[in-house]
Figure (tube, rainbow, N blue to C red):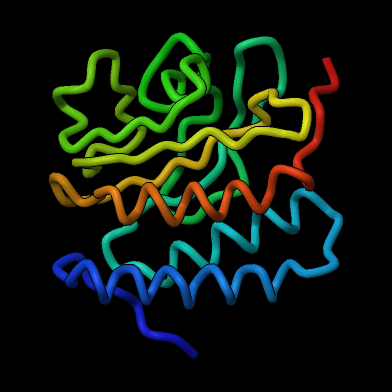
Length: 169
């Protein structure tokens, strides 16, 4: 089993924990081709390895500028998010990482959970360079995410690019 990293860890501890987590994820999905199984494994491993992650999941692009929830871990998520709304929509629309240290100050934030205080959302691209999904991680703590989270989560999503599907629409 593994320990879950608390919020107030040093940068070195956090980096080492991410390195271990990414190795575990890579090992777990090695040889897997089913997209749902891959995303489910990624979400499960991340969610249970970081104490300050209270909602961890993907929103998949299912139509032009529209995403649907899943897979995820945590409380009930918003079922549908358009590219025009919220932190997830901004990540998909702008095709770049969105770091919201205080979601209450993020223009157009969608409150899927009333306890969310901060959020990081990263776009996941497919081999054609299209956004296939976004990885959304929420925390009950203000300013829970930093450049260490961004760096390692981006590295993980880069690993998934060759596996990500092209849109069906």
